[in-house]
Length: 189
Image 1 (cartoon, one colour):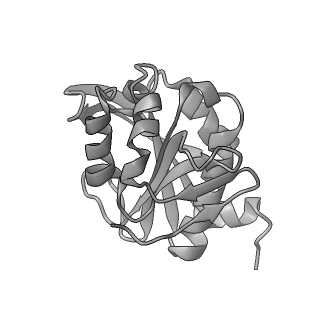
Image 2 (cartoon, helix red, strand yellow):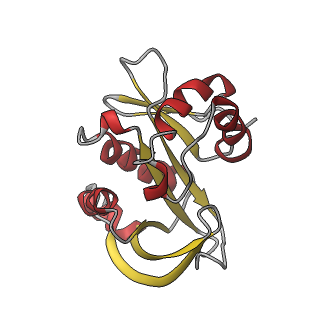
């Protein structure tokens, strides 16, 4: 079980995933419009969702997105993975952000709000120097979130292999250096 880091925004609680969230996770993650855009297969049943909570989502930096007015039920997920990853080209003091949201909540500004809080957490609490975020070619919703949040384009990987989907895709990488985030948030020293 991960530590109990809880983040809050004006409308959201970002909290650790719990096995009791399996039904809510299945409700949104079974939609074929959600998972493949983020790089994973749609969930097939509640037991699969429960296993994903135990093996993927229950880790430091992974948060269930819960609207404050939603009876503590998750509607999506956001995570920041930090530390070196040779496969992803990430250095020790860097992190990578990923997110998804249930279809009924698209277009309400929820993910940009969550991203801003996780950026703050990554820079101020984890001490990261740079945060990466990537999207697959054609995932315009994710691209727009990154643009709205101030990420800048860095590079494109034309043959990014996704083991979950067993295919290669075009993946675009964006970045938010600490100095840029600090400047955008009026935190200049």
